[in-house]
View 1 (spheres, rainbow, N blue to C red):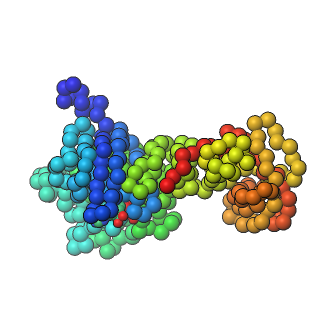
View 2: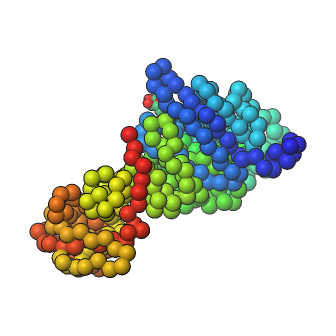
Length: 346
Ligand SMILES: Nc1ncnc2c1ncn2[C@@H]1O[C@H](COP(=O)(O)OP(=O)(O)OP(=O)(O)O)[C@@H](O)[C@H]1O
């Protein structure tokens, strides 16, 4: 293959057999991953699962104990961060407090010795991309949290990297602003068209923003798939419980309730509540039980139901469903296609 063909067909990022140990801690325990050009990709997982370390390995802030990092088909494993065509946006923004917004944005271009006129031009464009026209002469202390985050984004975009790495970029923002910035982040990614890789421990954020998600657990990826697939078809018990809420049925419960072995996941909103003694329709499972708790969640009601013969299921009922009071006897029904077999996680 020629180098120009390679540039066309190679993924933006390819990680092969990637490992990283810090002393006795294996932070990254064998990661293989390909991220195509132009994708909004999220690395999701609990604290300590290794996602930040993978991001730092892509950026070049860490070097792997084993494995390789390819960017656009080129092996960059041994290259320094400034030799890689990526930029990183950190949670704490890392803006220079004594520089104006425009000087902050131009900083990366100055370092790269871009001429003054072009610098001004590109900084203006980047400000426009993040909807901060008119703010160029302010200092970071004169901006809100969301505006500072947008300056940090503009500063990263202005150098026109192939890949933008985002390390919990919205972590410092309150919930409302965070949701607003999620929408903006997605819009900015669409308009610039480059690959975004977002590290987050917030499953709602990963589901709402991403083309695809990698779910990390103990230094490994348990599943890489679209948000809908990760939610509807979790590959492992860990993914089922970390992304959204799930009822997990172990081997014995699966045998008793479903008549098959293995571990199964059922989403609480897939379970219907019917009067006690209801016979299941075609393709449905039915179990009898007693409501033990009922909690109002605004958009829905959560029921905890103790099953006859042992075990408990969580059910989410829409607000317009007939109320089921604690102590009442009910039948729970769900389509057989909605109990989904998952691999057990350690
Ligand atoms: N520089 C370091 N020195 C020693 N141990 C480290 C270092 N960086 C990370 N670790 C360890 O590696 C593991 C993975 O850390 P990492 O930061 O990648 O996880 P994470 O999923 O990003 O978590 P968080 O969301 O809390 O940042 C953790 O056990 C962490 O303590």
